[in-house]
Image (cartoon, rainbow, N blue to C red; front, side, top):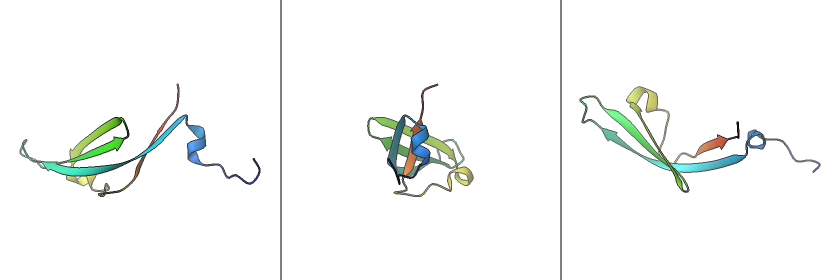
Length: 69
């Protein structure tokens, strides 16, 4: 295939992108941000403090790249 540029995805067997929603949990006394990410049938929940989770934005696409070990 001439002219096809290589991408990071070429190094992985399984590539997905997901959209997510965010919420806050203050039940522990400190505010934690929760990001819910859906990759089709695969669901992921990330939970962390506001400082670390501040880079995530609503409707941002996140990519999951996996390869066999």
